[in-house]
Image (cartoon, rainbow, N blue to C red):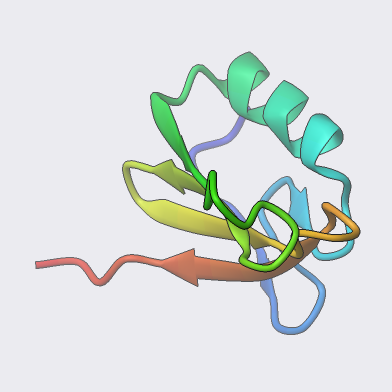
Length: 77
């Protein structure tokens, strides 16, 4: 995999395509070898977004559809 990822606003960032299922993205994350943390609301799992927090990215999924809706890149220092 190239270390350069293409940014396509409103569509994708690197291998992560908006609208992808959480299971598909988790497979990609595992294949790329990222360390990650999954954040969700245990008390209200269908009301609040699911977040896969990577070292450099935050991937935000709709709780009901479990599809990727936001790709947030952390600012570089």
